[in-house]
Length: 414
Image (cartoon, rainbow, N blue to C red):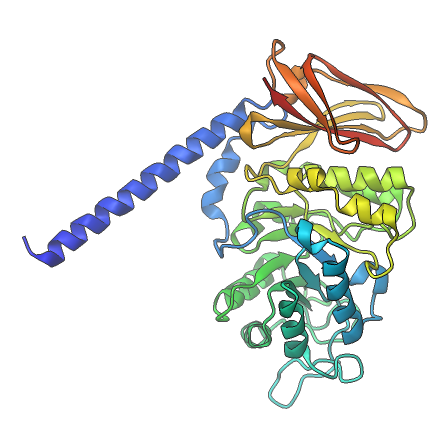
């Protein structure tokens, strides 16, 4: 037998082994999820086969986005200062890495070659120089475009019909992330428009995180996993309790579609923007973390107060969001305004949020069967906001929770 034949046979055998171990991994993961009372859809394991595989988004993205605080009032010094602040505040050290420009970074018209042009009055040094600066801080730069003729501000051209050219432009600038909006379309379905940019990014010569933003209109959880790393499941969030809670509810129904490589996106964090109480922001951050939502800060981190900084920097809550099992937690029990949200973590642990959406203080109880444990299980309970542990707790877990507040735990079986 020749060396060439031996090489072919060895390669086929090696490929068979890889496929075998992937299948074993899928079966084991499905079994773990099947045992969790709140998430019984092992079909989400099968869905992994249809995920975009660009190597990104193995955990939900973390970073900052300019829109919710600054809207169109962005310029290059602000972005550089935000990158500096991401490092100096310690946010980068706990996992926040993307500095994402939203709308209004470019001129209204393309140049004579059809290229997008950074706005001369606000980004005179250009996007490549900005990307180089952000990269020098150990961070990544994100940019924004739209699957239509204009962006949502109508102050920039969209990328419809220019997908290949714009993707190559972004790659040449060193961009790491694209948020792709859904304004000023030609009336065609996003299912027709978004695949073109997905393919263009894959062909751009640079690995770029693809964040689809079609606001959940055509149930993107059912078709976007093959195109991008995250997809908006909701309209834009506002800095109010009503908006935040409604985004959480809309996002929850798609929980089984999220997994490493592709995540449901209920929009950026409003923490620190001033429209909600500290307790409400704590609930906001806790539910987003449990639901494996992107943790994209939407406030001005250059001037945030200590309360906001400590909330956004809670390593134990972030660890739930970034857990390697990558299963989205969801609401598993509802009694009026009193809710239990839970999700499985690696190491047979379970994350639990007791959430009081009512107007008065109340006791909330999570029974073991609600959260995937056998009634006889004994667990250690770690309170992620109090940073304290209670050992050897038996069914059930109860706590008194203030109005619009929550308690968040990780339960570890003994």
